[in-house]
Length: 353
Length: 230
Image 1 (cartoon, rainbow over the protein chains, first blue to last red):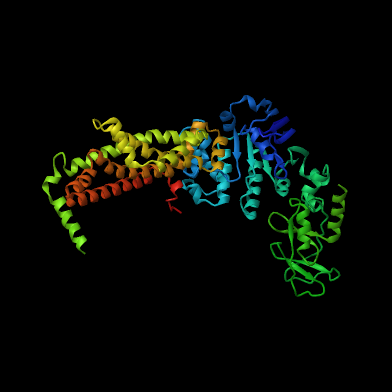
Image 2: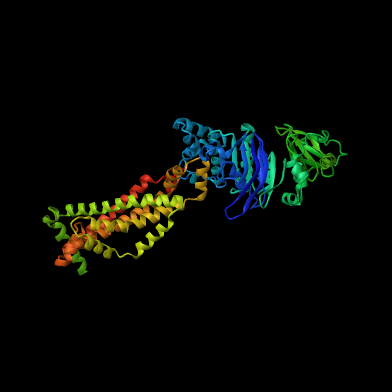
C-alpha cells in the first residue's frame, strides 16, 4: 500500500504543485491520478520514487517512509513507465528489459532469460529481442517499457501517462493488455493520465485532482460517475457520464426472450412478432427479419451475456433497426434477445442506483 | 593545361627521387614526425576536453567554460599563437609547438562533448534515473553511448585541425610534412611543395577514414541507426 500523508510539494519559485495531499493506493489495485494539466498528478507520482522529494508530509510504502530509502535502491524496487517509453536507444530490446536485473547484479543469462519471459508476457514476438528501439513502433516500444518496469518483479508500478503518445486504436489495446496483465500479476499500480475515460476504464480507484494540487475526489469509477463531489468533478467527467456509468452495470440480470429466434431456412415462425432473429445451424446470429418483409435480412448487434456491460447491450440495440440486442455466449451462440422493454427495465433500475 | 603537366612533373620529381625516401629528411621520417606531433597534441586535448565536457554536460555546472572556450577558438589566430609560444619558450623542445596545438584542439572536443551529453533526450535521462541508475551510471551507461557520435565528431574536427596546423608549425622549425612545403617555398623547390602538399592531403584523408572506422566500431547500431535487420 502506498500512503500519502498530508504531502505538499512547493517548488523553489514558490509554486505549489501538490497541496496537502492525503490518499491511499491499496495493494494489488490500480489507483489512477487524473486531472487537468497543472494539477500535480505527475509530481505526486514522481514523489513516490523520489524523482522529486516532497516538501512536507510523508509518503509511505507499506508503512516505510520513502524518504528513508536511498533513491537508487528505492527505484530499483519500483517499476517506472513513462510516456515516451524512454528506452535506451543503444541497447537491444532484450537488454533494455533486463536493465534493472543487471543493476541488481543478476548474471547475464538469468537476466536475459527473465527478459525473454517478459517479452512474451507483454505480447511481443521473441524475434524482437535482438532489435533496437528505433526499429519498433510506438506501441511496441511502450510494451517494452512495461516489460522493463516489470523485469525485477517489483510489487509497485508507477505509470506516467504511458499510453498518451500512441494512436487511439493502439491505446485501447494497450489498456486492455494492462488490465489482463494486472489480473495475472496483482501489482500495486499508480497510474497518471489526463484522460478521464482512461481513468474510468483502468482504475479500481480514481483520484481526481484540481489545479493547484488539491484532491477533489477519491472514489471508485462507478461512484465517481454517479456521485461527483462537486461541480469541478462533474465538469471534468464530461457530459455523457450517465451513459458511461452503464459500463459498470452488469447485463447479468437482463431479462432475455428466447422465443424470438428462427432457424435459417426454417419456417417463418410466429408472424405476430414484428421482428425475428435468424440463427444459423451452429446457433450464431445471421440477421433480423421484419414480419412485413420476410425476405430481407437486417443488421444485428451482439453483447456477451453477463460479461459485457449494459453500455454494450444498449449499443448493440442501437445498431439494429429492430431495436433489440442479441445476447451471445463465449462461443458466439445466441442465448436470447433483449427487447426494448427488457432494456428499458434494466435502464430504469440502473438510474435508480 | 600547362599547370597540370608541371604538377605531374613535380610529383614525379619529388616521389621519384630516391633520396626523398630515406634519412632524417626522408618521407617516412617526416610522416612519422607529423604523426607523432599530431597524435600527441590530440591525445592531450582529448584527455583534457572529454572528461571536462562530460562533467559539465552532466552536471550543468561550469557551462561558462564551454562558452569561453568556443569563443576563444574562433578568435585566436593559429599562427600567432604558435609564434608566441615559440618566442616565449624557444625551440629547444617540441612543447612550444605542442602546447598551442593542444589549446587549439580542446574547444571543438569540449563543445561537442558538452553538447552531446546535454542534448540527450531528457526522457531518456529521466528513465535512466527512474530505473535506479546512479549518477555515474547514467553518464557512463546511457549518456556517453548515446552522445558518442557527437563526441567523436569533436575529436575528428580537432584531428583534422591538428594535422593541418602541424603543417604550419614547420614554420617555427619543427619537423613533419610541413617542412617540404615551407622549405620548398624558401628554396623555390616546387617539387617539394607539391609533393609535401599531396602527402598532407593524403594524411588528412587517412585520419578521416580512421575516425569513420572508429565510429563504426564504437557507436551502437541502435544509435547510428545503421542496422536493417528487419
